[in-house]
Length: 252
Ligand code: PGA
Image (tube, rainbow, N blue to C red):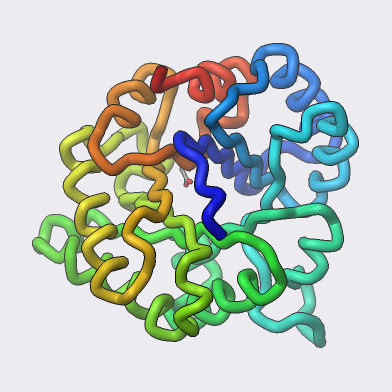
């Protein structure tokens, strides 16, 4: 898949915005955000809000849809889980894999994340592989080791023809939901490591790499100006249409 678009603006709503709130968000956001040529906007609402998202964004095909996670199996006795084929059938084009909250709260380890990415690709969805270090790991000087391990676990398990379809998100765990953003220099340095690891593992070195972690309207321009930052994955600041529309207008 070579239709990489930069900049890419992704909204990870986590466990926020039910169907009604989603419908009013999309209505307001569509008023504020004009179609932006040469940019991509993707929303990752909770599963139960997927239908409301699609119904309310019907006149705006530029607003793409993804899901926050999928199970690695296609079907079966997995209470509470959602499969990649279901996500696709429901209208999603994208899926996150390996978000740090999934790794921490739901035990998604590198092996599970690799299986999920493979499944996402096999079902014709586009994965966004999330990687990033904790504060302890960063302070122990383990940034490269952690990123290398997380990326290698996934890329080494994929057949060569699948490698090109990945999009990545570098999200330092210490910057997620904390108000502490990585400086543009920190982001540039980490993105260079991610790109170097992608190259080492045989992936496509011009892949889109998003930055995530306390992105806001006030820091979007500086982050997008950092070398190697191709877009952003936004949590808290994507829950408000005004604020996310301001972010999606950034970097020009
Ligand atoms: P945040 O979350 O923007 O609230 O820090 C980002 C993310 O977890 O994707």
